[in-house]
Image (tube, one colour):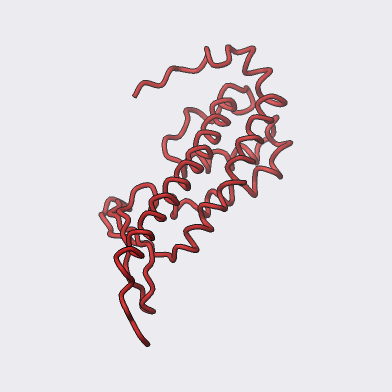
Length: 185
């Protein structure tokens, strides 16, 4: 098999496409994270859910909290069918999201001599530092970013609908955003 190195222009074009797709994925996932948090904040103010306590900090914990809410009686239960498949997708994408958000991106040649996108990071798991990696051809990366377009906009729209139809009337009575502590960075 001929393993000719791609030209410098091909390398730069692939890297720039990777930067664009990474940004697109992260931007779309940011909409998901914001919407998950917004839904949890509204639920936190509702009597059926406020016993769950304070808002979890990390996204995987927030997704678990949302799954718990979907199993509980309350106004969100009417939307559980629609939400479950979306939450399942976000849980499946969590490892990719972690690498794309926190990993160092580079290009490299795979075993077939094709240049691919690669991510590397150090991570704490169980108190121990581990090195991790994620490699993918640009086509898979393109699919990954594309997958989030309808998922993020559909999820954000559904959270808005849940707020308006099921949670917002009560949330508004409880002070709405005035009842939510200001986040200081």
